[in-house]
Picture (cartoon, rainbow over the protein chains, first blue to last red):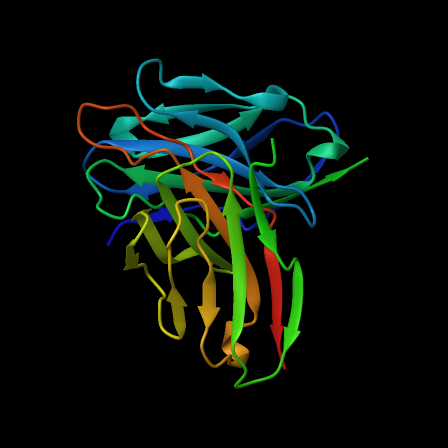
Length: 115
Length: 118
């Protein structure tokens, strides 16, 4: 079965530290890739997406992610985090040709940024 | 532009009662989805719909029923609520689904309904 793994359950950083959240998926075909963010008590918001082309994608709020096809990975990065980045981050995969069309989510990584 | 809305935002109900969660989108998106979010599980698909009157099961459909008589609405009904259905429910919509040779589509999420079954 297709799955998405997020390696870090909870990450704690100080402001200005660099961030990298890992995401790996298990699907051999073409995929669309997403990172969503959920701030406390709020709904999911799209941070960035990859459909095709340049494997380094830039999203909102200074986030970026790199798709490495050979590693089935789509890691999220930010050079310098802020307290306002405290949230839960979800990696999601949308396989091509899947009849359901749904997103397959990782279990999420909670990021806590200390001021 | 209202986007995608859900109601109620919070609901407490008793075991055995029927509960309906509403979802409404203003974009005329073809696809709509219901996910549940549980600690340690991320989001899991309950049901989805490709168009009005076309629905199908997702990963965790047991105990739920959906309908889609109009494109913009996609209600989710818990026929006889159980404590294991205590969760946060998110509705989502998208223009389409990725197919070979076409671009992908992102999904837009509603604000969620926090349901507690006592």
